[in-house]
Image (cartoon, rainbow, N blue to C red; front, side, top):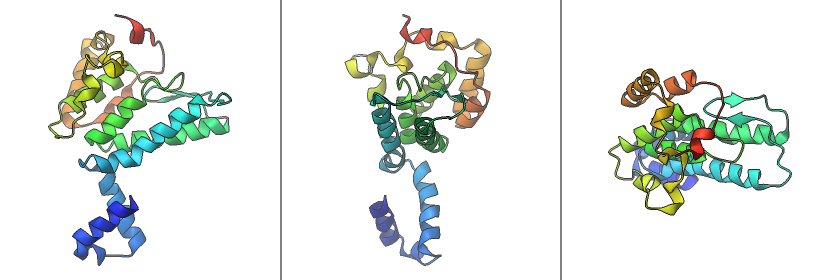
Amino acid sequence: MERAFIVYLETYPDYAETGPRNLLYARWLDYAEASEEWSLPCCLSAPHGYQLRRMLEEPDADVTISYCGRFAGDPETSYDWLAKMHIDVIEHIALKGSVAGLSVYLQLDGKGRVVNLNPDVVYYLKSAILSSDNPTRPDYLFDENDASWRDQPWNRPNLEEELSPERKAFVDEAVARGDLAAVLETTGPCGDTAWRGAD
């Protein structure tokens, strides 16, 4: 990210003259989080997903919280706080709305017992990504012929059945506005995940 920032300053030298370097970096970082250039939001969020997955693979990882679009339980252990920090960063960048940020957030789903997104959140993410015209849109995530992705929750044939007609309409409207925040603010508590394995 530091190298990308240096390239930005070299490309836009007038920007480099508008303030101290730390303030310029903070402003640029805000831009990078929302950028539709795939590498920037992906590089800011994907390492957190990777670190979360690695942490959860540790045999002594004592994580007592869970996350479904909202947290269930209060952080108590050091692992809880680390998991929450990683999830918070990924959610923060997804809320900026770039296709890369939304994709990393979607792939956070299904991280063992800790992250199982509610079906309305999964539906929002899938719909928002597929409605994007960004040339880097990750259509491979939705390739049912690819064994890597075929059985992911977002490709479950019964996903939409988990939303009431009213909730689906609400989420569809949120997708049209690019308003993930509205979905997260109104999603239900973490609950039954049986739909993930049902045909």
